[in-house]
Amino acid sequence: MFFFTGSTVSSEKLIHTAFVGLGSNLGESKELLARAWNTLAEFPEITIVRLSSPYMTNPFDMESPHWFVNAAGELRTSLVQEELLTLLLHVEKQFGRTRDQHIFTHQDRTLDLDLLLYDTLIMSTDELTLPHPEMHKRLFVLVPMAEISPNLLHPVYRKTIAALRDELIAGTKNNEVQRLRWTDRG
Image 1: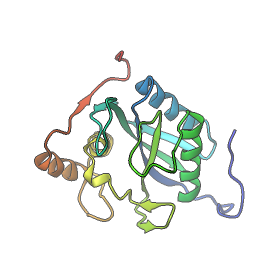
Image 2: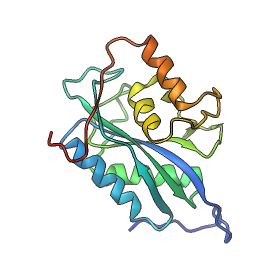
Image 3: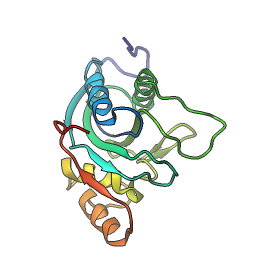
Image 4: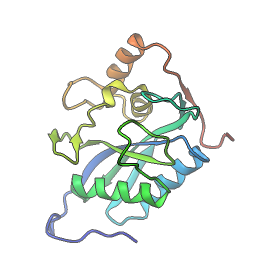
């Protein structure tokens, strides 16, 4: 089990709302995403709130014959943002995610857990940028996000997730997003 201790979380733990993007294009992707989401619930610092439907999407910004399954989830946590990112990376690794540090383009992956939003925090460090700097350009993020929280305001663009999705759909060609059900096969 992976626990956090230390001075970064006070004895009066604040509870934060975070949104996570989940993706996979290797293996049984839909099952991997469901298992990863349930794994997050096992950490005492995290309470999962809701998970979108899974969506099949074509590879974006990369060449691959493997289509993705993506979803978005909302959780509550007592972890500060850097700790949450560390936990997400730990879970990715637990599910077989490898990162080739010599390849600077997107790669096929068993599991990708992106920290999209953390409260209304706007920040940028070498390790973490919030909100996720590419989320407003990615239909595979905005469609599942809009399913679970359409009226949520993006802290930088000050538009709802649904409005960002609709703007992107209007200006996007050849970026397929097909809603699935968790109980579907395939």
